[in-house]
Length: 151
Image 1 (cartoon, helix red, strand yellow):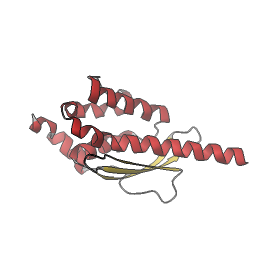
Image 2 (image 1 turned 90 degrees about the vertical axis):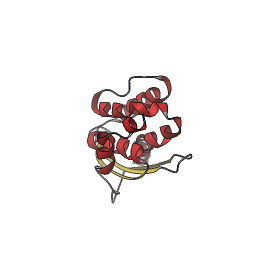
Image 3 (image 1 turned 180 degrees about the horizontal axis):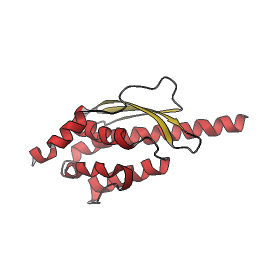
Image 4 (image 1 turned 30 degrees about the horizontal axis):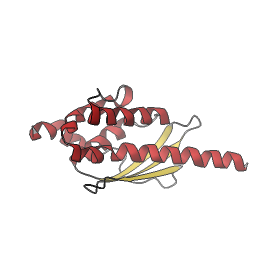
């Protein structure tokens, strides 16, 4: 079963992390750490006028499963709304913890990680990039609201 967990597709995603690094001037930044294993994701975003992700960078130090989830996220995140990211995160939690089908739409490829459900110790590392992205988008939206209120 462990071989299924670390399939060639998962390992390929883990090895090819799109948008790796940091942005010079992000609208928002989020960071999450999986306490059990120490996997960490720091995400920077820039939002467009509609509040969708126009710029994205991620610094991820995680196991292959966390890196694979970040790989899928990086492939599909540009153009995503806060609702898109929230729905993907919620669907991932449901998939990992209660037998849900997993994300649909732009983040459907995260279903490749469905086997992680059988390994509760790996759930948090699989979610760090999504959680950090959601935190970054929310931080950017709060900053935007503050700027608008100050004007």
